[in-house]
Length: 305
Ligand code: PPS
Image (cartoon, rainbow, N blue to C red; front, side):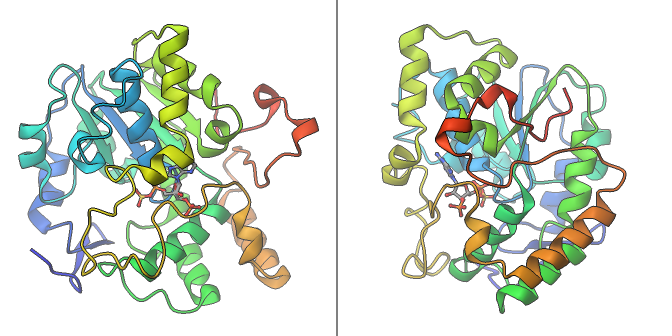
């Protein structure tokens, strides 16, 4: 099923038809979660693959065997994609199924309402999200033409890119305060991966010994994941992702937006951001902290807890 140019419209949002069908999207909203499920939720380019790797490693006590032999989309398949049911069926994660989704809360919330599944919402500062998404559009043949960066940024701010508005996604999921939902940011993971893994292992009730924790840290580093073909998407054919136009594991940094935003674009972004986030008290980390000022636990993050 290539459908590289097909756009699937669902509840007013567009999704790449290569990965989604009307039926797969409808099935997602009818899915029956088990309390033992682990659900990774993110807007695209917010650290999804990183979280899939971390959760796999925590579940395997830091042993990289599974994350190095099974592609990320088979270990933690996307709920809304058309191959979900087949992958879940074949998944080796029998005790705790790991599922991923990019769906916004207003669509998936009702499905999850009475579930105790362990949800992990991973978010990232939206300037880095839009830059990462832009570069990804240039290599992923199942996404529309990116156009120029200013045009792309407009579409991001208007909420007309695939997967819908970032603003609705972050506000919808961040307002979920039930105990089974953990909020964590890409920036938090970048600045203190060990602390982030400790929070995650506590949330997943999967305690780690010091050596196991250190192994998780080692195997989920940007360098390890960039070399891991089960996480870096090089298994995907050139027809679908043009690896000559970029890498999925591109930079893995906080603050790369500064290489794409002009002063004018930044001013424009900030005015839209301020008005759309007026009712939302989240704070974001926009820059890589200087090494002498970092106390990761003090840094504000997109976390309401
Ligand atoms: S997707 O397509 O939605 O699944 O993309 P997603 O995985 O959410 O985001 C991809 C970006 O995450 C970066 N990444 C990492 N950064 C730091 N450390 C690790 N280990 C890591 N793994 C993935 C990846 O490089 C993309 O960000 P950019 O800014 O484009 O480099």
